Amino acid sequence: MKCNLELMKREIAAMLPAAHPDGGEATLLVTVKNISYLDRRSTGWILKRLACLHNIDLHAVKGNYGGMLGRERYLPVPLSRTVIFLPVAFKTNTITSPRRLGYVSLLEIAAVKKEKESALLILKSGLELHCSNSVKTIEKRCREGELLQKILLIEQMEDIKVPPLFQSGPPAGERVMEKDSGRGFAGMTAGFPLKSIKAFYLKVDPRFFKDPD
Image (cartoon, rainbow, N blue to C red; front, side):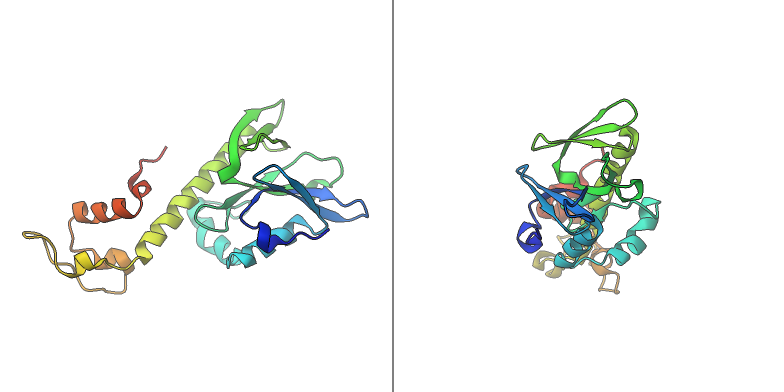
């Protein structure tokens, strides 16, 4: 079976490596409603196809964000600012060790519990996934995913054009905005006091100034 990924791309909660009954690699796609589909294509292929459907360059992601997160391997995969998949190694007897890597949506993780020498990942749908990674490793990857979300949000804010209110001139007694010097939104608002800039960001998205956990 080959799933229609274009229709499913916003409904996938997890991509789990599996063995196909006819032999070879396959992927168990789990939706946010806890419905599973066995796709005969590999997990790596599925991930690349989903990235393509979201217009994401995985090589660029590694080059642009690997340094920021301090790692070269096992990076979170952002398909959008809200949909970020975390790499997780799963326990399965039907797949060889190097091919047990799957991906879980950060948005769908409800809890992580400790088992003997590994972790139990619980999704919002109630599905429990047994992982080879430790709780500490899973929690670290969750934090990296959340950090990447914040980085993407900042980049999104910098791409927003200056609103007409700012273009018409600052309030009385405040400095005049500098002309765009090619530094994006940050450069265009450099002449405004922090209070004015913060007020605009809060209007766009209050989470921009949310204190880190």
